[in-house]
Length: 108
Image (cartoon, rainbow, N blue to C red; front, side, top):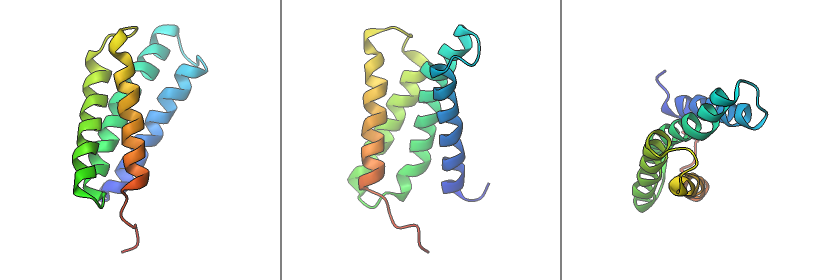
């Protein structure tokens, strides 16, 4: 896909599917856990990486890259049930706040 915003949107939708699958126990417990507690964070992190260059404020760009890195690395490396797991959720909230406060207009 040539449009990074479209790619970012598709990745976000897939990430939300992973989260919903885990909440509603659509698959086996192991798969639900993997989808909602690991893959979701990795996909959201990738989405944040793709979105970062489109933020107005360059300071927000650095924050978005940091949130993205924490999401991806946390999703892949932090064990499920660890005390450190809340860091991934905090990174998602930071990324969402930066998304809604630092967007450029999409009119071009």
